[in-house]
Length: 322
Image (tube, rainbow, N blue to C red; front, side, top):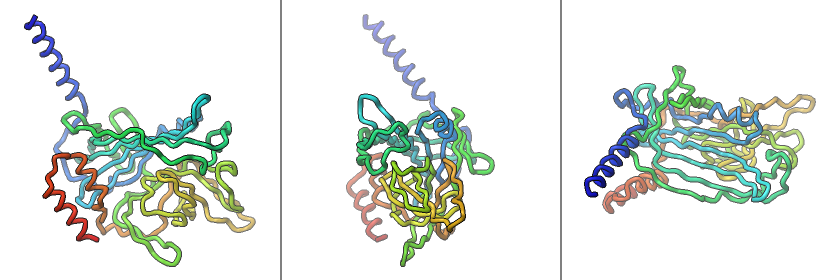
């Protein structure tokens, strides 16, 4: 009896070891990350989902920290329509660290969060016509950390032109706009605002009068951004190279609009999945200054055994930068 139990235990341990090591890993030696890797990318399959009538998009936001390390956020936004329960949008965010070996990439997920926001407005047949202001706030429904170990990464490769990322399962993510490097200055009315150049977005679909109040001569669009931190209504943007501005922000998503066209001139045609970037001057020689409390909190979550002395040192570093 004891011998049989011992054999079963050994077999289970072997199987567990195989499962642990079946993930992807770097084939070459780790190398310093390519700075141009920083950016906002969209999964090519998102266009297919829209063509099939499904409002779903997958994006990848890669940013360089003040320490020169690479972090990523993988977002999945989907709008769901139900016959017996409340309609809603769901947003899943997977975040973690990124290792490189030349153009070879390895993504390690350290945290997964899921948010829902219910729709309380008129249930029109086309979900794209749902009133944007009739959604509730994004409420967190899941939040858990993941352990990083050998074989737990997801491998990919940066394309030769450094504008696409191809994962081992065949998914292709193409960058929106240019690499997100340095800091950017934008004109906000009477003053100029300078911030880390880490904000880019993508147009999902145009909004009709049912979805958002229309201003004569202007066209509104629903957009998903890498982050909506540090931007506000009125922030100047370029939508597929045409001037516009952010109209209203709803945490992870926003309504953007093209600037009013002159009488007699037709408004430009904006396709779904067109780029949205901030309209400002970029200084690529400066380094990100975002060694923020958010990064500190993430690091503490990843290492719950951090000492009180180390925590104090990190807080003092943040205080000295204020």
